[in-house]
Image 1: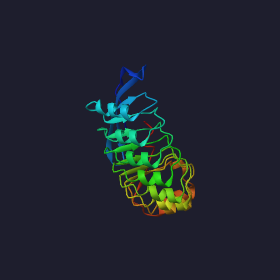
Image 2: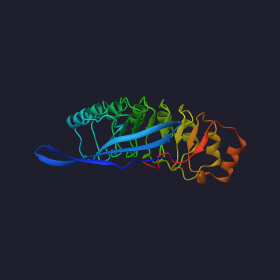
Image 3: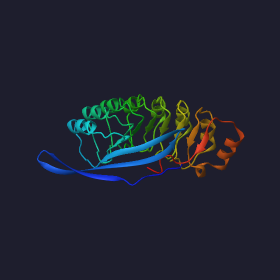
Image 4: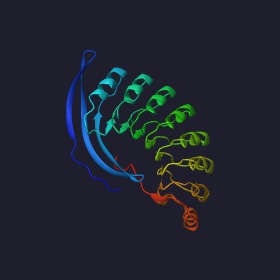
Length: 247
């Protein structure tokens, strides 16, 4: 994946919250990345906030700078539904909340209402069926859940309902044929499974039926039998590398 970056511009802002002065760093950066058949421009504002309330979310959205494509909050570990609702009003193309460790259904519902293209929640390591169903209603292009290390058949089915172009589950280290089967129902163009350590012949026989265009997996994870199956059978997709390696 080709990418280029320009030096980040760092701005320190002093903000007084409940009588305590805190430093907030805003970073503007631009990265060009090719993702699932489209060019994704990442130029964003990154804030080093650890606690975010609904009121502060309103201010962040209001002060969004022209040309900043993403709102990035890597250190916020939890938010409630009210705060999520305010963040969902952000005008940026991407909402990157990789510091969140877990969310409930109400919060997932509000985040899914984000009108941008990309929603990333890479800090979340597990989701309930209700949360998975809510997130799958996100109407953007890419849903990124690379923190999930394992999912069962039902969760796979819920996540596969996402109607965008790209679903990234690069944190999964293994999937069985049942999970793979549910994921083949995903109707987008790019499926990210780059974290799979071993991809067996049985799993490949299932993945071959997926009708997408780009499958992000480690080629070295394919067993010899799996590679043979891929070579012997026609499939619509091509294998690509780690899309998110540059982020």
